[in-house]
Image (cartoon, rainbow, N blue to C red; front, side):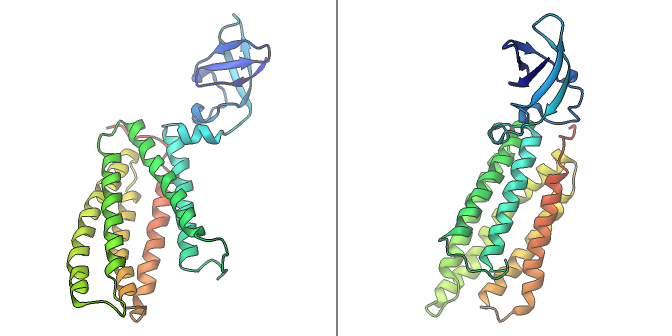
Length: 257
């Protein structure tokens, strides 16, 4: 008989009846998350018109809404990878490295960055739910708020023709302190992800990021005169992103505590 997956416990057959099933009876599941396969076509056997056995997936249907709403590691990985991809794409647009094309759509890179940030935030929340972590998402929110305040303050006080000495003193004294506080929480996030995934790439990504960001800020403050900082600064950010992307890509299951 053929049918369709309704949930992680129910299949609706072509006869209109609903059949309960156990994921261990799905022959070709191959480690996939059933929560993400809602709507997939299956073939199965049933001997009492209530339970499905020997289930074989014949046509997968990766449901976007299921990916976004699920709190499994597979769902978190998908959201994180999409989020990181969009954030990196917006980064390329912002620094005009993408074929030097002038886009006419207003605020295009900001919109892409926001969508990427939302997806990545959902990924962190999904890991928090799947791992029953008390502090992961809380640390993420705190780090986000502090980082946003620090970046806003930086661009308000960054050197310009109208910069005052007091503004520069505030810039070089207050911003690094706020950044250090944010870095502490970001470290906690990456350390938790490294522990849950068993991958040190999360921590390596953090340390490269911590070194690269000050170099980028010094390059910006110098108005481009410290050109020798461009490659290690922005190159380090790209390397940090690549490590983080690979870490999420290989995040397949939670490590036992």
